[in-house]
Length: 94
Image 1 (tube, rainbow, N blue to C red):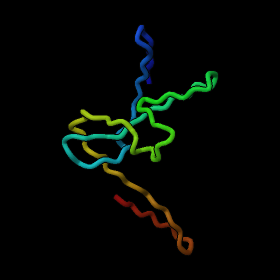
Image 2 (cartoon, helix red, strand yellow; image 1 turned 180 degrees about the vertical axis):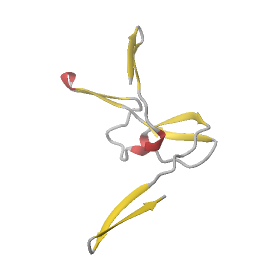
Image 3 (cartoon, helix red, strand yellow; image 1 turned 90 degrees about the vertical axis):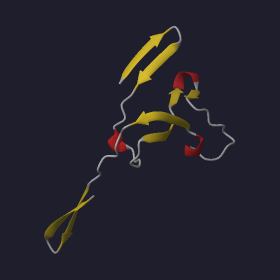
Image 4 (cartoon, helix red, strand yellow; image 1 turned 135 degrees about the vertical axis):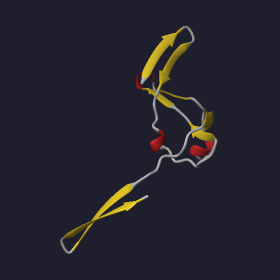
């Protein structure tokens, strides 16, 4: 993560691993995205894409992150360990 300040305000740079996001295999992608910032000393909350308090739903109100191309979804693997009568079985699911 990196941050900086200039005459126009501040910038925060974050890394979000693609392995933490589910998306389909395709050449172009569009993601719902929003950022919240709480300033406790001012009792203030800021959002990149404002969500009106009277409107229901959260994710449907996110902004759109576009322009990400040429990425492939990661292969997700779960390991599940179970015990049956003292024997341990490990099952790999893909």
